[in-house]
Image (cartoon, rainbow, N blue to C red; front, side, top):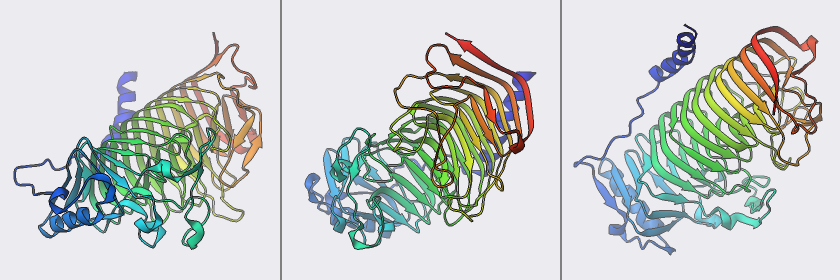
Length: 465
C-alpha cells in the first residue's frame, strides 16, 4: 500500500507534465530527407581556414528547398564564425567531425546577445544532431589558468556588454518552436553552452556537455523564458551551473528533466537567479549528481514565484570548492529573497522531494524571506548523510547573489527560516563519526518565530561509523 501511494505521488505530476508536453521524438531521417553536404559548397574542414561561407550557403540552400539536413562530413574540423540556422534545417555534425567556433570578436554579430557559434532565431523545426562535436575552443579565452577559477577574456571594451562575462555562447535557439537537439557533444564553451530563449516545444536528448571545470559561467543548459521542454539522457560535466531554468522576459513552465548525470563546481540544478516571472510545473527525475558544489538549488531574487515542482529519484554528492564559486556544499538549497533592498520578494510553494539520497559536506538550506515565504514543502523517503572530506572552511551560509551574501553560522542538518508548511516523512539524517570537523551536530537549526506548520513522521537522526 505504501509503495503504491509513493508511486502515485511521483507518477501523478510526471503524467500531468508529460501529457502537456510534446512526445520526445526527433524526426528520423528517411529516404526522402534532403541532405546538403557542406563539402559540396566548398568547405575545407582543415581547422585553419574559415568555412563559414560554405556552411551558411548549405544552410540557406536547405532552407530554400523546404528543409532537410546540412551535413558536416567526417573527418573534418570546420572552423566558423556564427552560422544562422533556418526553419526546417537540422545541422548534422557526423561522428568524427567537429564544428569549431571562432575566437575573434569579429567572428560574431555586433550585438552581444547574438554571440553564438550556432544561432537559430524565429525558426520552426530547426535542430542539431549527428553524433559529432561542436567545440567553442574555450581554452583560447583563458588568460590565466587557475585551479581555483580561471581568469577569462572579456570583450567588454566595445561597451556592448559589461563585466567579465563578455564571451560568446556555443549554441542558441531564440524565439523558436519545435527545437530538436540530440546525439551531439557540446565541448569547451567559452561561456554558456546551450541556451534556449523564449522557445516552445523543445526536446534535448542524449547531449553531452563538457566544459572546463575551472572556467566560470560556462553553464551547461540554460532554459530561459521557454516552455514545454524535455531534457533527457544528458551528461553534463562543467564548471558552472549545469541545468538552469531562468525567467527574464516571461515564465518557465512544463519543464521535464530525466535520466541525466551531472558534475559541476557550482549548482547542478538551479532555478534563477534571473527570476522576474514565474516557474510552474517542473519535474526532475532519475538524476545523478556527483562531486558538485550544490545539488538542487533555487535562487529566487527578482520577485517571480515558484510552484508545483517535483524532485524525485535523485542521488547527490556535494563537496566544498573555493568560495569564489557560489555554493557551500548543500545537497538541497531553496532560497528566496530580494536581490536588492526594495525588490519584490517571490514565494516558493508546493515543492516535493521524493526518494532523494545524498552524501554532503553541508546541510540542507531552506530560507525564505519575511515577505517571500517557502510554503508547503514536502520531504518523503529522503536519506541525508553528512561527513567532511575536504579542507575548506565551513560555518558559512551563502545567500549570494544579493540578500545577506555570506553569513557566519553554525552548521546543522537542516537550516530553516521563513517557512509556512514543511512536512518531513521517512527522513534519515546520518552523521559520519570522526569526520564532522566544524559541524554543530544539530539536526535542525531555526528561529521559531519564522516557522509554522512543521510536521514530522518517521524522522531519525543517527550516528554512523
